[in-house]
Length: 71
Picture 1 (cartoon, rainbow, N blue to C red):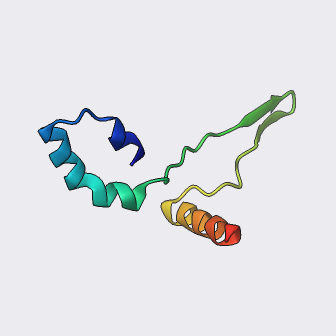
Picture 2 (spheres, rainbow, N blue to C red):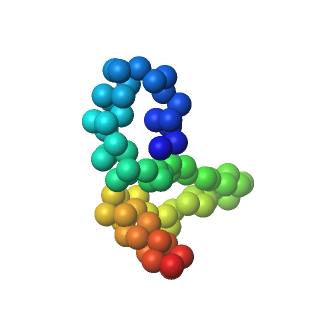
């Protein structure tokens, strides 16, 4: 279970792990970070990442499409 495997083996941690395992498994491997890259030139600013998805729905569709294409 990756991150959860590194917790000390205590009764409290075992209870915590049991409680969050379903959510951990469901969302494991999902994570995004949106960074905006800009190029500043004498003519102005060019937003290099303007075409990337920004809304939750667009990001989820983008990820689903990428997963489908990998199969």
